[in-house]
Length: 255
Figure 1 (tube, rainbow, N blue to C red):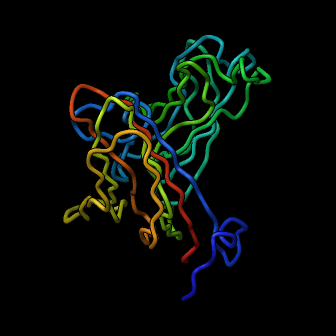
Figure 2: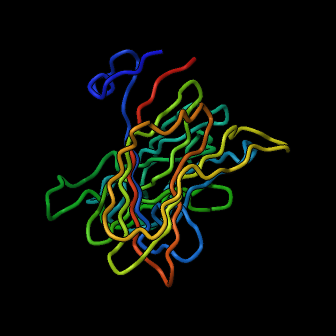
């Protein structure tokens, strides 16, 4: 088969399209943890699919208020198809539960706000946390530290049913006073319900990372097949450190 040029991917030619994932964890410790806000990337079995809601937060982040009114969540359902759901914020009280069940969540963003955002006033006031309505575990969050980011930061992805992806490039960033080991891992067949399970496997490992490191892969990494978890994890040599990772991918429908 022939593969498209970068311009083909950017313009959606031949059924290909591009995507970007970016994550940050400001408190990476000495054990490997996902590069995402709070170090969270929930990966339950199908039986652990959950409905979601917005956790109680800042009083201004409420439908009809000055902050965020609602948040859109993107992930996979129990069959591995990509789904989205928009959840209303409810200020200092938890929001109402959504109706869709998720087994993965890899993106969330503020969908509606009571504020016309500028460089000094943002679309939400406090941190926005999306939790499940069964155990109240955190599934994804949107940071408000120093600025309301309006968008989650998660450097993991779960490939939807009927698609595959190839990673084209990545950028690693570690605060200058720290050294980190950063790994790219994958796990196939995420809908398996009983052993033997597909293993989680390291695809790339970068040791002694400090500062800003751009990576362009001469041969794209992959393919990462349908229903595969893929993402970056990190650890620092001592105490805690601030780590961010972004990666660009090409995707196409395969069924």
